[in-house]
Length: 79
Image: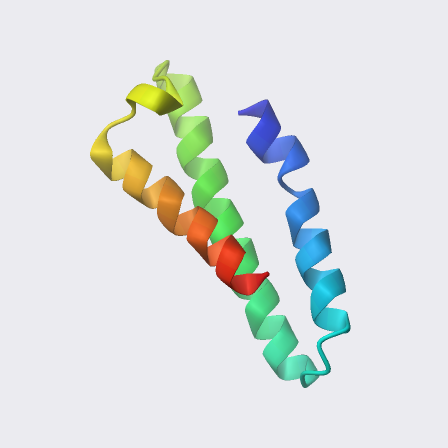
């Protein structure tokens, strides 16, 4: 959980920094950053829940894995 929650938050800064150079209108950039925030919150929530439950991320139920992948894809789509 530490790696995702503490180090992963840096991805949001990188997304915002990259979008600042994209030349898009501010409203669009803010929407994309919110997409990254939502994806990060989903991913971090799943990882923390797995950690509290004592479930290895490699042996997580399919639903948790699907949610984690969806969060990661949202971050990737935003970046």
